Length: 601
Image 1 (cartoon, helix red, strand yellow):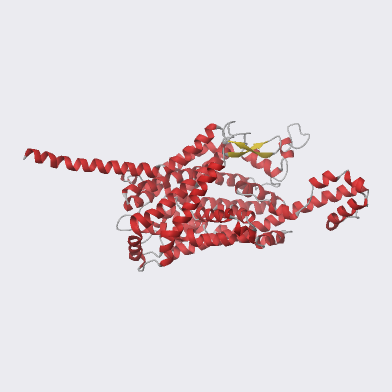
Image 2: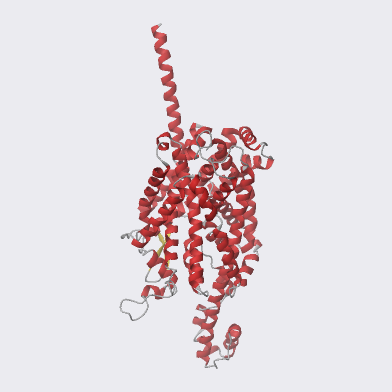
């Protein structure tokens, strides 16, 4: 315990593991591989690594320095720099609350899939029988078993955000379990969190390594790996690739939430946060690349399986149509025979031409199909797992890894709420156990809304709008405040006081010029993109067709989106206005006694 009564990490390693556990999350597993697939495989690594140097690393360093110097949570740290900046910390807390509300829902889904993995036949491997017991459920038949299990069994989803229903009991219980475990992880502050991160930060790497060994030995995995490591350099001329690289670095490192400031506030005064910032940033980016290798191996397996199934269907179609011997066409010669029969028997081939076009087999096309987010984690991976030998084992390992990644990030998310609030005297009077419990119960009760039939649509709103635009705004104001309000010279001296040396020219140029310009560019891009995008849309599940359809949000959904955006961002100007009014009031109060004494004389 320090002289100021603030607890410390037991060792610098605990702090590094806490940052790794927080920064390395679900986005590394499902967002980065999607962006690689979208932007030409390995070619995406070039803008990604450049953006790490220009934006991610300097801002990560900056937040750690602020937390360690001020030894306060986000609200107290920014208020110490300037009373007008207290709203930055408040905005971070509000954004972290929004994140906690929906992020633990993903952990609840992971629990749900994990519990269902202990069955002789995985429930997403086959369609359930209908009520008449005459065949598969209609919705599952038009979709796929993995889609049916996710949308119907897991979410029990309604057809639109306007159709609401009751709470999914199973999901609600999984959410309660997720919050109960989160509470146990944080109940004693850094003392309990510091112990937990040894497991949450390291075990996912063991699972990823096991999956890597299994993934590269799967049939067709080489096709996925070739796709990843064959860069399409033309994508470097695509501005969207650079914007997505900058955005991915920004969100992957967890900047702007206040978690890094909170974690660093428990460091010793002379802790070498510079080296730690570099190490954590490189581990985070390395994990994204490592996870992509695993994911592309599984992509290759799934794409090859789909491609070969397509060839087999085409082979049977040709055999039956042209009355050929069973062994006349092999899988390898399907495409050759298709051209040959089209040339030899054009009239007969014309009768099946439409079917051939509809079922055209193309491995490259299969690999080009990009899927992100929950679709990748809970549908595509589940599809691949069910086709592996011993699918139950791989399912347990995968969803347990997802759970640890999610829980590790939740430690940082909840700390970003609790630490700054505990800095207030009224909150510090409560015990850690009580205050942490109240925060967890509050988030749990609000989060139950995501377990209703329309809950997934509200989840999408929070995921798309609660912590994107607002975080860009928060970090932009942060870097401007440090560089031009607090001052680079002052900040240099603070760093010298902690590390024994001043930051070199690279860090100063990034903070003063490069990072602010990049953030302004991203900020403008998001505003233009939002305006040009027209009415916001979401993917509504159509059970008759067994697929998602693009649907516009109703008016109340659009109003809620605006409220989400404004509620966090408005904390900055409103708090500054409050500080200004309070300062004027204090000045007026100070002048009043002197005026009275002058009159009396």
